[in-house]
Length: 214
Image (cartoon, rainbow, N blue to C red; front, side):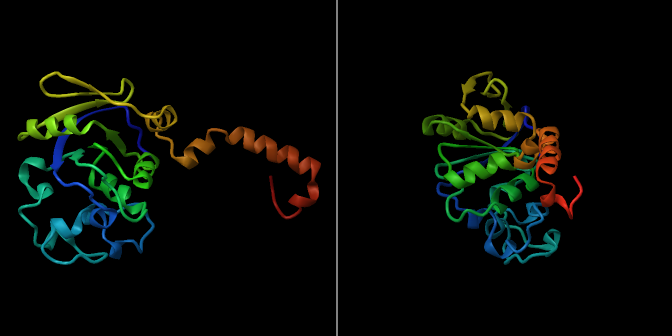
């Protein structure tokens, strides 16, 4: 998992509340569990004028010119600004996979659905909760080329005008993101202790390891 420390990036405004996971990545794309390749299908029903199917060549599909991610000034955005209850609906982990694969590293909203919120941290995407009035102010400030700087160490956001906005992240989640550790990576930090335990256990109960090498 890619570590998140500081990020200065373009912001894309998605001015919609209650964006559910089926809108983020529609159900027909859930057959794959590769954790990669979902970026072209992010917000598929909003980005394109036809129906998307797995393995389609999205470069040849007709785009919806009114959708924010298709507008030239937001190409390359890595921060998504949106409204309350983002990521509601079914608990598909494909939603943060698609956001991360598209290129988003952080999402700012007044609130998130719980399961989606947890899945973001497990997949290297930083969900930031800010008061609704602060999100309103950011929406009003957004213009072409609007960039924010997010510092996860300091838990601050800096606007182009120099204003600083504080946010809070659970310490364990912050540690994992700063160090790029998913569940497997966190476990592997203790690989030596796990190996030593298995060696000792094999000595105490050798019959359990007759067909295995420690």
